Image 1 (cartoon, rainbow, N blue to C red):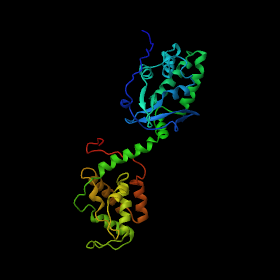
Image 2 (image 1 turned 45 degrees about the horizontal axis):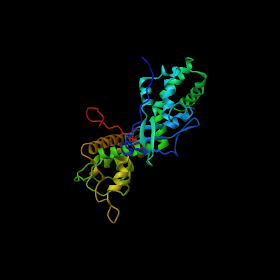
Image 3 (image 1 turned 30 degrees about the horizontal axis):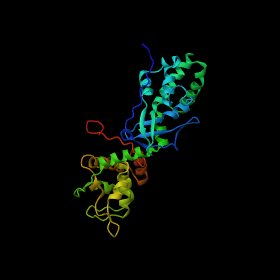
Image 4 (image 1 turned 90 degrees about the vertical axis):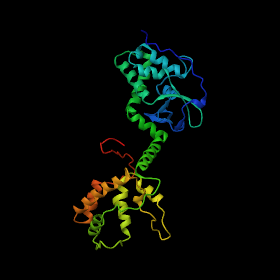
Length: 316
């Protein structure tokens, strides 16, 4: 059976039916080993390398081996020296480039970013076994430059950085966390912080603790934010500050915990408080406590990679 790929007629579907790129531009290409390839991220998350950019990066002449740029790659993958090292998936992907709309509305064609790594692997394997002709050796040299510039997994991160998608992805992850932890409607006030939390806090700070008094030093709120809400989940403290109104004296009208969800937020709060109180009891002074706290329950800060699990240990 022949390994020859048949070139199909181009589908002339309306531009509005094409996938839309949400990130990327020709001014911010992917840069690898001194080579540049325009790249985009589609609305469904696919990372795309533009076809003619790949052709240029591989050292191929544009449109000299057929009726257009795409045929140049198809013609190359069909050559005797390369075809036997190309997988069916790679051959199919090159035969069927992805047509899409760039953010400015232009129609482009490209391939999933990992295809470039697959193609380079095939070319380098052919060179290793002395299957390439002399006219293809410069393409193998380009492939070597490319594979030295990225790893198969790293190509995704490189495209995300070039297109700015990494920031969008972080925002998406943060939104998912906040959706699980915070509710849009305030719950009724209920006592969420056990007396032991304040008793130990006062002891470590060297303050007199009166269990019958609700008066506390003003700094207690700041300490609670640092010890609890800033370590509860990524972005939660910042969002709580945005949501919670204050009166003319700067006092919060509601408690932060009233925004927490019943299924995720409150159980996580109780779990965190139990751990904090245990660390407090094990600490002879404030310095020791803060050291243990930072080691056992560090602040999330800009890390949005929070794993949430249900009671069966399954991801939420």
